[in-house]
Image (cartoon, rainbow, N blue to C red; front, side, top):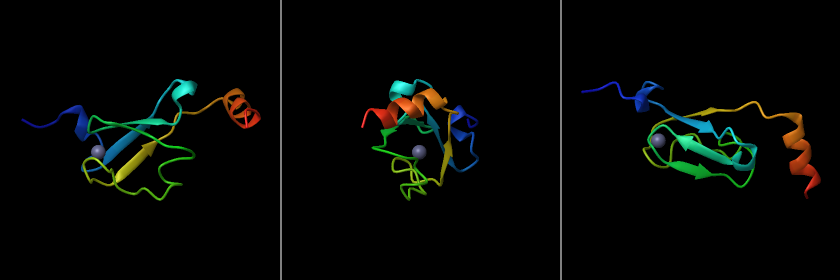
Length: 76
Ligand SMILES: [Zn+2]
């Protein structure tokens, strides 16, 4: 059997950014794991392959609100 949700990317692994702004650094991977980035995006961190399944990584950003960005940057 094939055609699980995990295969969405057709040979790639989709990393979906968490919806919740409190967990916006967390990406859920199509292969069933999750990864927490310290900052920025997988792409910006030079991650081109999923570190769990080894497939080419596709990142799917949530559109974060300006309020979220303001909060993050003002906290520092
Ligand atoms: Zn993967």
